[in-house]
Amino acid sequence: MTIALDPSDISPAVPAPAESEPPTAGRTDSSEEFWVQQPEPEAAEASAHEPADEAAQEPSSEGTAGEPSAQESTGEPSAQESVADADPVVVRDAEDFGVYARTGGWAFALKVARSVRPGGQPAEGTAATKVSAKAFAELAGCSPERVMRYYKAWDMAADDGVVPQFEVLVPGEDIELPDADVWLSYYTSRNSASSVRGQAISAAAEAEGIRPTKALEVAENPTALRAAILADPGTAEAARGALLDRMKEDPALQTEMARAIARTDDLKKAVASEAKAADRIGYVRQIVENGRIKTPAGQTVEAPAELRAEAERHLSLLDELDDSEEAGEWAGEAYDAVKGLVAKAVEEDPALRVQERRTKFYNSLQKATKVFEELTLDEVMEEDIYEADMLQRLESLQEAIGTCISALRRATTTS
Image (cartoon, rainbow, N blue to C red; front, side):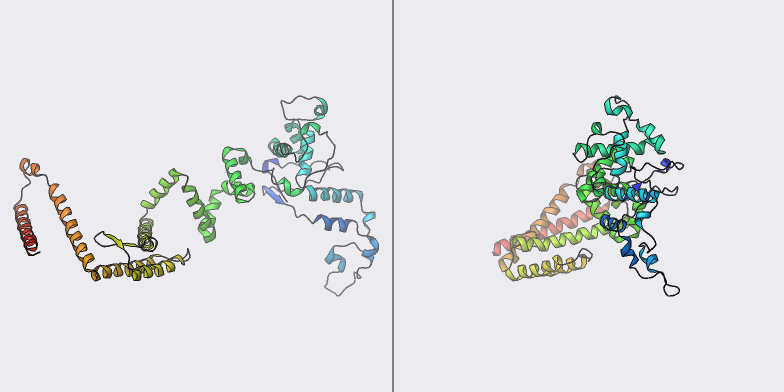
């Protein structure tokens, strides 16, 4: 059970609480929170009510020199000690501790809920004897903010029907309280939980199945989060997964991450390498899934059975790789093997080989035509950019085009 204390809430010692009140835990000036170890309720009750005659049967306190006695090692009462004879102050502390062990923060929240009337509410009926949160905080020696956090926790629980509404509670009256574990669902010691940002973090934490206070604590300590990511691979992996999930719905974060990668040479090279590997894996996967291959010239034809089987073998090896294994080398090997089989399939099919060469020639002709068409001859005439080398290159090009035309005409006549 965790009880959070604000450093500002710490005050000098106050009088001991009444018998109906649980004990206030010790406070320190060096920490915002302290922890209370709770015994199991059944074990506490058994220890509190154990008869003296059973305790008398324990071994004698005299033991071997240097060894603790049975009473010292077990904490059980000796033959001369009886629970019935315990000091009333000790009894009251034990009873109050038992209440807290069973109910946790509800024991304190009840005191706030039955005694506090926030400012602005009319002092009518049972509320006439109640005080403001500020006055209650002054009496308790803590901050009004802490009092209101308990008040709001009770309010939320009352809305859910877990506890009674404030109006039916009377100062000093005890009621049956929920289990201690339920308290954590309603109470938070952090002011950030009430903000829009805090509510979003709390909702995300509940969706992940963790306590909102844990997520809020991390959010309030970005430096600690950074340190954990830098030092621990497991934390870094969790952060990476979270960032990827968030980027799917956050275009602004996508842009920021892309910009950061583009400005970092090592990351830019790594991205380029992974993109290349992904393209090669995609090439192999496309053959397996669609049963078709794309030739070097850009033709799409049916994949031979041998080629498809080889592609399936390589793809199965790639799919078996762990996330921690580098896929680049495996992807390159698969791509080269499949590309080699594609080239072999083209060469072994006469009709496909001819069509492949025809497509290559036509593609080259299209590129050359486009480049020549983009030459702006008007600029040559208007400005003094002429050089003798330009004319020589054009004359060589004209000669090559003439040779190409003659060869095509001969091939046409022969066929």
